[in-house]
Image (spheres, rainbow, N blue to C red):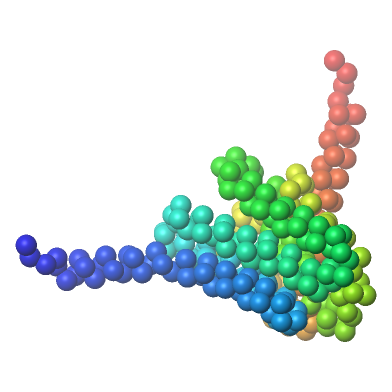
Length: 256
């Protein structure tokens, strides 16, 4: 039997390499979550918070790389979900526990566990409802945003030299708020309908440039925490606005 044609063999190897590319981003996100846990155990909480934000960026890249290279697969989807559980479920729960909740006894580890189990339930529901829900909105707070809210709290408090034990009740409340909001039915804008290939007004490009290259670098802890805190509140505002509009519509409709 003759060996396969060298050009065909090279093409097969190239296709395998392309399939590895999005999974390498997922592995990098998984490593960032693991690194956040290790640094929290060593008391380097600022490194932990930054690592969770890095994991969030890498998690957003792996899906886009898979779509651009047409390498989506069931394996990649499952692997991404397991990586998210470590980076946005276990890591934030352990970081906030080591930083602020450790001295609260049962109340501390129960809050951290509630966050962790809510992240697992949120990811499981997302995987089963991919083809059912409206793609314009997330059902419940996305796990990366919840993790960013926890990491942002730790980072901004460290930036102002405030110890975790001094704000343990605030940390406890935000941990429960982030966890329970993940498994709620509160709608959150997903931004998936935005097409980056379409032309946009110049003012939009200018505002994005100012945000990413001026506002965030000016004071990353404060800007990122405020950004994700406002995003976490936006779902409740959207829910209230829908309820008010529905009530107003029903009151204005003529009786049968």
